[in-house]
Image 1: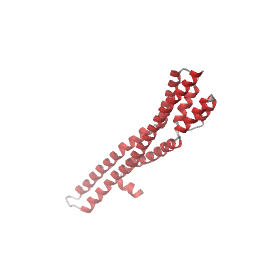
Image 2: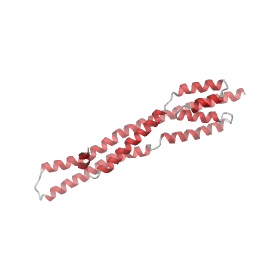
Image 3: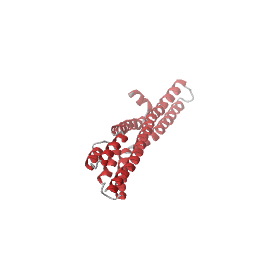
Image 4: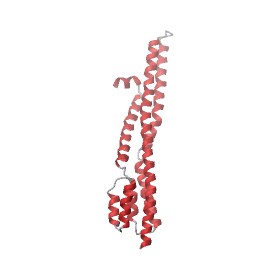
Length: 205
């Protein structure tokens, strides 16, 4: 591995940093999102039963002891159960935006790595080929095909490294965005259902 890095030239240094950051961000986001996954239907069912029985505190405890953005939004709504609907909805929207920001944390950095890694690879290839032709120019017209092939091969290492970094990072970025979108849909549907439950409860009172 060290030999490959040396052959790739100085451009391999930022590529190595990009690979370390990509792995760190990917692990962090996947761990956070997969750890906070929850069956929103089961969660909503438990909260619905508690609210229908008038057990507000129990409903709050169910939401608070459950991980994830959906539970956080539901807990925010239940906490304002005795307020007007508009106020409950506003509070849930604020908490929802905070949860979305938490889920999207560092994703911009991962997207940047996906974009610049292939470009850095191409830059390394260009500089490597330039170096190869400079070597040939120094040979005063004597063509050494082996030297030229070696120089081009070394230059292409950076392109391969850039793609090796960008392709998995792009797959992780896409998967993480899918998880976030799924959570956002669950947050929206569960919030609407909770608002209807709280409205029905206030009408009964």
